[in-house]
Length: 349
Image (tube, rainbow, N blue to C red; front, side, top):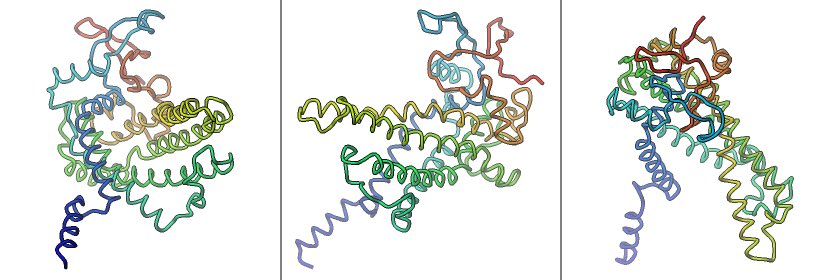
């Protein structure tokens, strides 16, 4: 091999990441970045999971529903106050409970999503409809062409997401149960591998995949909500001046493109709130049958299926943890031994 060709070949090899293809390299780097970010933000995830399970051990405060206006109300600590108090009372290492399970769960989800997408693209290109008009801008499509493109994307995204969350569910259950132990100060589940073994032996597949159904329902609701709502809004504003990207005035055309970008950012944020209650139910069902204190009275009744959990949580519990701030306590209130007011999420038959 000539020296120039050898140097070029060596340069190509050095440029690759772990010998991966360009597509896989990009995926691997994005996954590593997500793992790092999720590890750093784990205290937020731990706190939100505890809140979803109804664990509110810190005193309430009083205030106005609109900060300076509105009616008087009781408020739960904001999420960052909750994190601080949890760290002080239970140790700051508690805030990183379940880190191993969280990393494995996210890794499995990412790999399953990536491989499923590759598999569909290679062997099932027609699933959801023919791949047409993918290189065209939205304003170059008719309503029906745009809808067919949205339909295909929605079907394929649904398949990919179902495979990913199903593959990762056992590790997600381990993660939630490790966190749930904080409530009863228990040590049944120590590591991800040990938790998998215990759940598998004691409960079998039903335990490993507990809470999967509401998670899938919530995921599908968000996927289709985002696709359909984005499609509807975009097709409407394309007929108006603020969304017309083909205007001769360059400044107005640029502003219209910015509007479309904003829609793609804002719609998922809005639609996610409709899928959130299913996340709460999924977390609650993940600990059902675990034998942990949180799965028994007075914390919670037993649930035969996730519909029972939904009915139980429906009055005030489906929005647990959906806010970081201004977390109004709309349920029962009790007086603690220190004469301070606390949220009462206990079940009374």
